[in-house]
Every structure is written in C-alpha cells, then in structure tokens.
Length: 450
Image 1 (cartoon, rainbow, N blue to C red):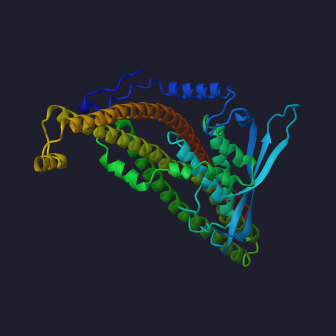
Image 2 (image 1 turned 30 degrees about the vertical axis):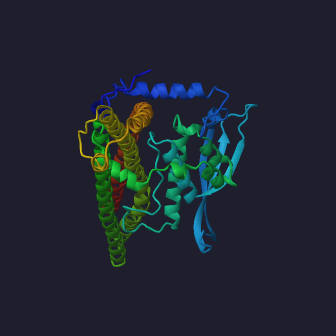
C-alpha cells in the first residue's frame, strides 16, 4: 500500500498523477472491467448484472409524442407532452424478435434520469437532453414548445439521448436506467429512494472550490477552457446559420413574384403565353421548396445543439474534480494544522499566534496530565487525518483515471459526429443548389420554346 507523506508541506501539494498512456488504453480497461463485473453474481449499488447484456441487445425507440392535460405538484391544471418509449429485443431466447415493453414518459422524467446519472457517475460526460424550448431558430419556425414540428424534433432528440446512454459502456448497466425503460409505475419513487439528491454537491460549494483550489490540475483547467470555447463557437455558428436561413427564406420567397409576373404576362401574350405560364410554375415550385429545405436543415442544427449542451456536461466533470481537489487540500491543511499543534504542545513552543496560546498566558500553563491528554487526542486525530487524506488521494486518482478515459471516448465520438454532420450539411446545401439550377434550366427550356 502507498504510504501517505508525512511532511505537511507535501500534503498541501499532492503528487501529480501518473500519465494514463494511450487514450484508448484507459477506455479499453474500463470496458474490460465492466464486462468482467457483469459476470459476477452479486450487484453493487446502482448497477445491474444479469440484465446488463440484455440492454445491449435491444432496440430503443421513442415512437410517438402525445399532448396531455393533467395536474402538477401545485394541483393546477397543465398541458404537457408525453413520449412513448418502445423497447424491442433484437433476439429472444427462441430466436424470435419480440416486443418487450412500451411506456410513456414526460420530459421531466428524462430530466430526473439525467440528474441521477450526473450524481452517481460524476466522472462520466453524461449525454445531454434536447432543448426544452427552441433556440437559434429561423424566424418562420415556431419557438413554441408545444408546436408539432418542435415536439417531433424533441422526440428525435430524446430517442438519441436514450441511445447514447444505452451505448455507453458504463451507463448502460445502471439499474435505474433499466427501470426507466421497463417500469412505468413508481419509477420516480425508486429514483428518489436512491437518495441521489443528498449526494448532489451544492452550487455554493462548487463555486467556493472554483476560486479556492490552490493546485488545479492543468488538464482539467484546459478542458474547462475548451468546453467554454466549444460552446461559444457552436453558439456563434448556430446564430449565423439562423441569419443565413432567414435571408435564404426571403430570397426564395421573392422568386414567387417571378411566378406571379410571368402568369400575368402570359395572359396578354398569345404566342409566348404557354412558355411564360410554364416558367412561372417552375418559379412557384422553387419559392415553395424552401419551407421543406429549412425544416430539414433544422435536423443538422439539432446535431450541433447536442454538442452545445455537451459543453456543459464537460464542465460538470471539471467542477466535480475541482470539488475533490478542494476537499483534498482542505484535509491536507487541517492535518498540517493538527501536526503543528501537536508539535507545539510537545515542545512547549508556540510558532504562531493563537487564541489558545493567549489564553495560556492569561490563565497559566496546563498541567502535564492535561497536556498529555491533549497530545493523545491530537495524535489520534492526526492518524485519522492521514488515513482520510490517503483515501482522498486514492479516490482522486481513480476519478482522474476514469474521467480521462471517458473524456477520450467522448472526444472520439464528438469528432466522428461533428464531421458527419458538417459533411451532411454541405451535401444538403449542394443538393439545394442543384435543385435551383434545375429549376432555372427548366425555365430556360420554357423560354427557348416560346
């Protein structure tokens, strides 16, 4: 076992963690450990064993969205949207595919699931939920959270969230996630019985840790800055896209004027009438096509928004590391203080001003028995403090190891997804331009036949 350092100054500056090696090594080790754990008969808190691999052999769909009316916690009537989750086993024991479960969930229940995962898996970049209300939309698209188009986009986003969790090597094994997919009644009570709210760190404590950590880990500091920059860049990109969409919408709709003018012109031209009428029809088709084009474009915008929200998930991991580092430094500081008190009592010298030292001067020295008793208490506290500090050091190292493995997994996923989304967006723009060229080519043929 590693021995905790005795020097108080070294306690204030815990030794740096060893390099993790190749980015994939940590992830592979984590996955291997999880796979090995799945073969154990026992189960730990918040994890599953027998059903772990079942989760990897099912299809998950959020197939429908339904507007409902009910009573909220204040007993007031409210309108909300419920989503139908269907899970189907890929292969049953007899080799046949069967429908295993279907149940309805509200958006707030998805939020509860994610909040639970954030608390129980602080080292994991937990997948984000889709936006609750539409942001960065072009002006003709409704921002109403009950709008059918927005509800449909959110349905797709919620399905993507479940698929992200189900494909994660650790999150997919969680018992609460399994019950979320299979247990409709009393699921909220089951989550609350885990006591995860009590384990959640307060915002005040997190803010205090941010400003008072003396030796922050450079890697997590850089990751925090990266997440801020990623959020800023994607926000700017989405705003630009919305402005371009607005202008493009206007340009396309103005082409409808061509159709109206050509139609009116055809009424006074006998020989050119048919050609002008046909050209006007092509212009009308071109003008109306922009509605479907921009609605399809929202799909790619939603893919970017997912990583806009992932930036906050990265910061959540960084905040948890700051809290652990803060607790470690406070424990080291407390231990150093007790060691100093013990030394002063043993030698009879006071190196720093203290209320106890002033009291001693005013009311006399302690008896040897009192001093020995105090020294004994301090020695016990020092022993406990050393064990506690050692435990926090080990816990911190384990957190960094696991967190960095998951961050590397996330980076690989991010690079693949964003590359695919941007390429698909470019292909869509090329296709849109080709359709515009085809419309004008058809109009040219109409003019040529006049």
